[in-house]
Image (cartoon, rainbow, N blue to C red; front, side, top):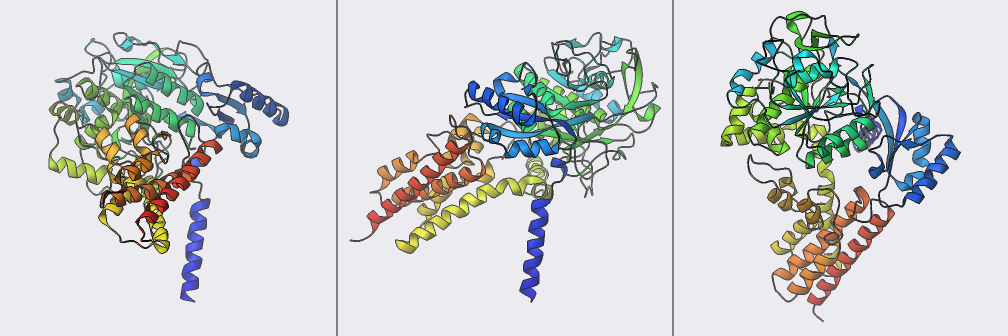
Length: 588
């Protein structure tokens, strides 16, 4: 009876977990994104578009002039249309079909009142200015646009783009983006108005939100790629919402690979989870503080929050003051509050850090987190790594050194010693790796049943190298130390190619029977190394088999049926190779 009850509980838990949609699917949308595979001809895409138009009475169109290389199309539709499209033959020709979620600006505006900028003093920006003011760094403000108010007159700008109206001039029609840009780089020491954090930095205005404050993930994703392609060093997104998007996640990964630091607001719903895009990997999620250094009552917290910064509370002196525009487009000083106001503080300090010579986004992220002012007993993760400290961040960046205490703090805050890592996707991300390891051992055990042999350390080494590598090292990071060695050591043999290239697409030369075959051929007559070669063949078989099910992305083959067949066939060939190699060892 006890076993039956335990079994029912486990079944119930599994059912609940697999049916829990969470924030990733709660967003609002009016359109659907169709991301067609890049390995299929244009004529086939045109046929699929015609089929959609006839079957669903829809008119697919490119999201913008920047969508053509990626084959990203948009159609009007609701959840029923989305479900039907995903079940239609069109799905086989796409990378994914997903909602074009609408994200919104996160500020709570207040009446204009200029008193003093308590927020800059609280992050100790004056001391940071002794070292750098952000010169040479470009910050992309992905928002409602930026208008040329008087206190941005001396601020440097580069060309941006208006993705809402598809034009080059990204003028603000809300006031939100101009306010955000002011926190980052308001003209300073000009005997007028207020100051900005990195006031010698350059602003790239990218409009993705309309005057009402809403915008789609397709526009946001294109703005991110635009910023990365046009030499932006930092991206600030004071926007967010519910709904996970592959398109947006891919764009963020693209910008991260190109060296861009990405910052986003956590959200203003006082929920135990940051909004998207703050929750995505490679994005620094920012919660908001009030003037007393406490979590602002509106600020989201918990999963996805990496650091906290001033966001303001109330009107007047309690808000974040910058010059922006009112509803009539007139310049005026206004105090806003929100995580939208907190994020540009972090983006501004990230610009200061980059100006010192720290270039890699992961390095900048770790400088921000290691230098943050710790908050004790933060059991609900209101503050992430702590409260933003511009002076300490710049000092650490300039010094470029890390003590053992800092190192172990990083382990605790950002990796395997941090319980939040396991709660917020870390354990889930490790599951395929664990499946590869276990799969290789199961294959070895199955082979041993029919062809008895003795377990050895060389065999174990081959199983690990072939199946998963030292995967716990793949995300490992030491300040100012190249990350490539850790990526390579943390990768299995099939993943070596993409680890070196810095992407997630398997190289068919590595993800095949080729390397195990060469190892077996070279080491079959070596008493010790032959078992390493056999273990490698089994490990690669397990790795390829898991990838065929979980993420069958192979260079030149896409991620569809062709890639799956290729991986499965090579997995079978690797196992067959191991069987043949073991047979040679058996006495006749």
